[in-house]
Image (cartoon, rainbow, N blue to C red; front, side, top):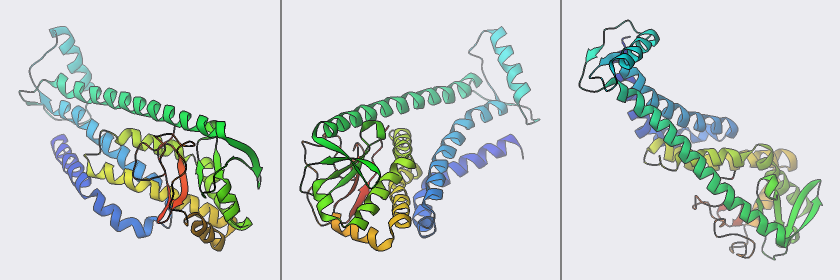
Length: 299
């Protein structure tokens, strides 16, 4: 295969996967829900693979083309020798009006810009999470329940949430403790502990940070939207294995009876109990019916 054919193939694959990605994810869901942790790996891999392929197009085109030089003669000759030495395709470059240095500089600049946006978004979410954790620690009582360190929030409405360990870890309301039977409480704690043990907050932070300015790509938007559902299913699987299906179902029903959101005095504005808000800063477990939880990105 010539490098020109490879470039055409990659461009076609990028366009097709970007457009058809949501359709593929919808139709693959029945199989993916059986292995949610594998689904998470596939979703993250599809996003990273798409980005890496897009960034690789510049160097591939630089191997196939020659154009006007924007560098001094000595520097241009050195760069051309480096390109020739790295070129795995024994082809003669085609003349074009596009300077080769642009084909290399644009992907490099794109990589730097992506790295900067990921860092800024991750830091922003980390600050929001730290504020939420401080609010919880100020108003909650630390306890050990069924072997798990828990912050107990004095509120009659049943809810459970999880922050990264350094920001408080698992939190339960007194309403949840009153509403749950012992086996249901064990299921909730196993669910929340799975979020911590499997580092779901890191996964969601990475995905949300990468996707923030790339949601115009259908594949990336659909992957980000689906990720939280599979992380929830993975945590449910852990709870089911630990406490059993009846206990898990009972916990979902018990925590789903209240339609109220957790109190604002306990939650920051950036930590609402809704899965639709991408700036949310806590993992909430069934604070409302028809909503089993949400996975906002946490650092």
